[in-house]
Image (cartoon, rainbow, N blue to C red):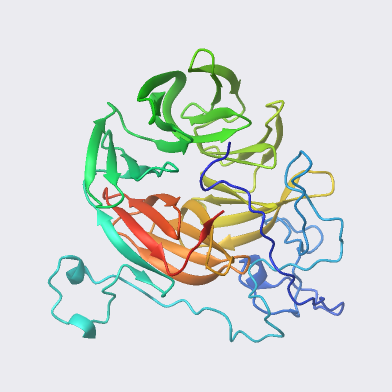
Length: 431
């Protein structure tokens, strides 16, 4: 079993043009490199900390040329090739100090009068009259109905129904053909997250996880969580739930009794676990205690605690051989395995605002794209691994839920309760 939005990627990035750093660098650390924005390659300044320096940032270590080894257990793996170059945050194929291929960020703002339907300037308005920039996707339709922030979106495979959950204590069911709501379920509490797997739909509530079998109409209640359930994921045939008290609970389905039985309770985080993802036989958990924990899916033992963030870790995502994490500290970190198997932050991308959630997909040319929701009511759409901005999505309030569907569809849910259906310009594949 696997998780939508947390699937490992088996596509490989092409080799970038090999380049080396000069041995005659000035003994000064590059200011732009520290911010994760240096576009010079090679750069005349150091892309590593001076000996003895301690600024709280992890060293940016080069890691071009990694290989996935899905045939073996263990976490994210490092290639045996030691001659690799760092391509994170760098436009592919860029040579020298040229920045002609870089995407220039513009000051963009939605027109408040347009939002209210009464802008008198029309096409001559200096503010945006559209919900997104870039021409890579289009808005198909908004789905109106929820009264509070949308925290979960699920599109079970093989069905023509979309499920959305909100803090307004409801789960709404939408017909994918008409876009009309065909059912509203009052769940009696704020929805913290949602997950679909096979015939099952899981809903994280306060002190409870609801499990609905859509095919048989079975309705189960999984007890045990203390406080709000913020995240759900499937791994090693177990359902894991991240809870408000910092515990990760696990259940295993018993076919004979047709119910989920408690399997484990993973303790270590000191505050709420708000994000979970599974990859490479590991469970990764992000918490309000600013840390990420790495768990062995077989033994359920904690293997490592990552402490690179300085605020709440809001989202973790497995992409290829890398672990990506985002935080309210306004950074996205890229983690990769060292020679001894532990993870270290090899690149840090800086945002202007706190980062709420990450989601990935491939575009029509099989190139990886990262959706990055920030608390300024926007979603940045980046090409990977360059982190060059391809597009931007605007919302009335912050986007808390992003879900990738089939055939280039994706869905967003924001703080106003609105769900939007988007269509990529050509067929895309979820990662």
